Image 1 (cartoon, helix red, strand yellow):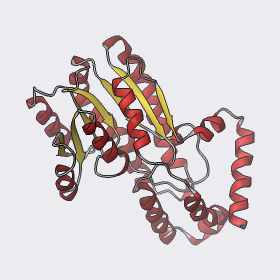
Image 2 (cartoon, rainbow, N blue to C red):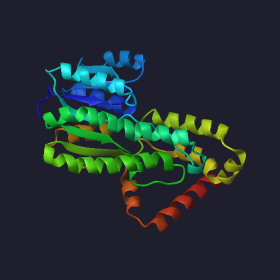
Image 3 (cartoon, rainbow, N blue to C red):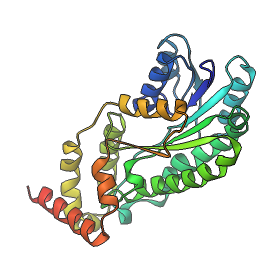
Image 4 (cartoon, rainbow, N blue to C red):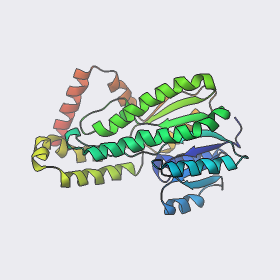
Amino acid sequence: MKRNNSVLITGASTGIGRECAKFLDNQGFKVYAGVRKPEDFKTLNETGSGNIQPVMLDICQEKDVLEVLEIIQKNNGHPLFGLINNAGIGISGIIEATPIEELTRLFDINLIGLHRMTKAMLPIIRKNNGRIINIGSSSSFISGPGMGPYAASKFALRAYNDALRIEMKTQGVRVSLVAPGPIESAIWDKARKYKEYMRGNIDPELKETYKMFVKASDKILDKIKTKPATLVAKAVFHALTAKNPKSVYMVNAKVVRLLSIMPHRWTDNLFLRHIQKIADG
C-alpha cells in the first residue's frame, strides 16, 4: 500500500474520529475528515500537517455523500484506499420508554447512514484493493438494561460487517470491525443529556416501574473508566496497513468479550445484582 493513498473518516469532529484523523495524518495519509458543523470544518482545517482535508458530510444526506465522492474522484493524486465508518450516536435507555422516532434515528445514523457511505465509496475502494473499517462497539457483543436501543444498532452493524467481510474476500477488499469499550469521547456527555431529556418526558408511572434502573444509571455512568481514543486510532491504523488485518479489533473490552460467551442465565443475574447493588449504594 502506498502512503499517498487517502482515507475518508466519517464523524471526525470529535472523539474517535478526530483522533483517527490526526493519527493517520501523522502516519502520512491524506485524510478526508467528514464533519457536519462549519466550526468543526474550520478547526480541522487548522490541524495537522495540511494533509487533513475536512469535508462537510452528513451521512444521512445523499447529497452530502455524493458531493464528497465527487471531491475524492477529482483528486487523482490521492486515490481512496480506506473508508472508516465512524459516525454514529450513542443515545440509549429503557426499551419501553424509548420513543419510536428515537430508535429510528439511531438506526438511520448507526446503520443506514453507514450503508449509504459504503455503497457510494465501495467501487473506488474495490478499484484500489482497499480497506473498509467499521467502528462498532463492545455493545455489539452484549446488551443489558438501559443499553438495548444502542446495542441493537451495533449488533446490526456487526451482522452487516460480517456479511460484507465475506462478500469482499474475493474482490481484494479487506473489511474489519473495530469494537471499542469505554473510550474518551463527547458521547458520554451526550448520553447524560439524553437521559435528562428522557426523564423529563417519561410517564411518571413508567419511571416508577423502572426506578431501580433509573436510580443506578447516573452512578454507572460516573463509574465508567475511559481509555484514550488513540488506542482506537492505533487499531484502525493496523487494520489499514497490516498484510493480514484482524476481522475484529476489541479495544478496552476484555470483560465484554468474556461476558459475551457466558450463559445468559449467568449474565442476566450478574447484571441485575450489580444494578441493584449500585441503586442501593
